Amino acid sequence: MSSNIKPTDSELEILNILWEKGPSTVRDIHAELEKSKDAGYTTTLKLMQIMHDKGLLKRDTGNKSHVYTANVSQEKTQGQLLKRMIDNVYNGSASQLVMQALGNHKADKKELDEIRKYLDEISKPKS
Image (cartoon, rainbow, N blue to C red; front, side, top):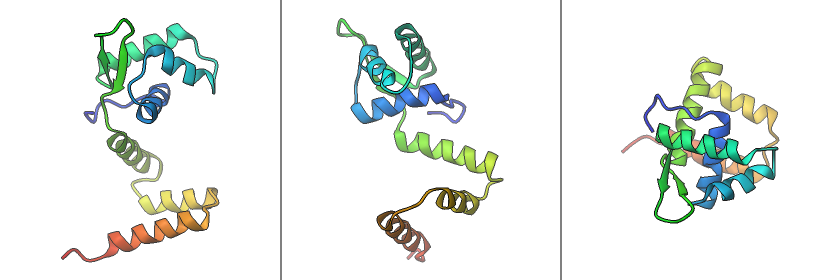
């Protein structure tokens, strides 16, 4: 995903479904979206066509029903969105983001242990 392609919230919902479920038809995606919100089928179809045109999705037209896959990686997209949020909301301060996140979310012991382990790993001197 080039840095100028930023998925909207609705596009991110579709990408999350594709990242979790893998290749899917518009009907598959629409069924998942309807579980959490009122979404029209034609709206889902149009949005996925726009996402294809933007390069966010790949489309396999070999079958009767077109099958879509994400054309962007989950990790890279999350990283770009997180960087944008840190820059725009926290004035570039990752520590402010982390403190805000931990202050607003009751992390369990396992999550805190994982965070400590990660901090230990990234603070080790490079050899």
